Image 1 (cartoon, rainbow, N blue to C red):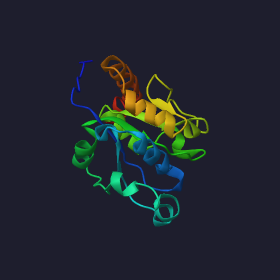
Image 2: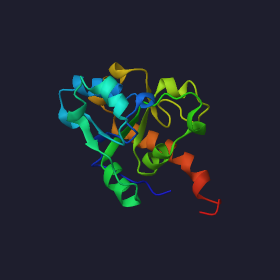
Image 3: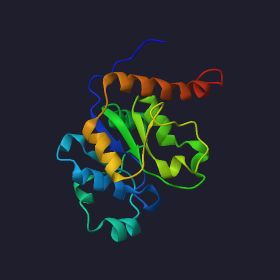
Image 4: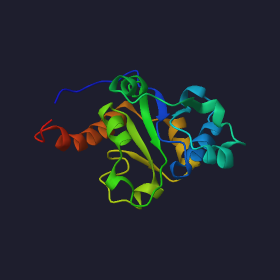
Length: 175
């Protein structure tokens, strides 16, 4: 397989719904600790007005929220191509059969998934920390990861391992 290089992947993004079970507050807390704006997570997605009112109204949510996004392939490319990390802090017991569409889209665009340990601990999944994704426990872990970043070698290893999860869905199954 041809090696693909993504030298301009620098951003971090979240493309989940903004809702109670998505724990967007963890991302906001990590963003608040990051002094470097370019390392902060850009938050996209449909809003739960109840969640925003009860959990986010006294935070800096509005600084980081970029709005909803289109669902076309071009929209996803525009959003995900420049991103090194796709952050998803979901924690829904038994959710998604071990994956979500946004995970597959991010993997396809060679973004490293950063997942919540509360999700990976409660779902049977092929996602493994430091193998095909990164897993954090809380906003401090997320902050440290975003602040430090990862090496190009780590990036290539993790995205290559994650991409191998797609192969069984792409080849030989009518695609």
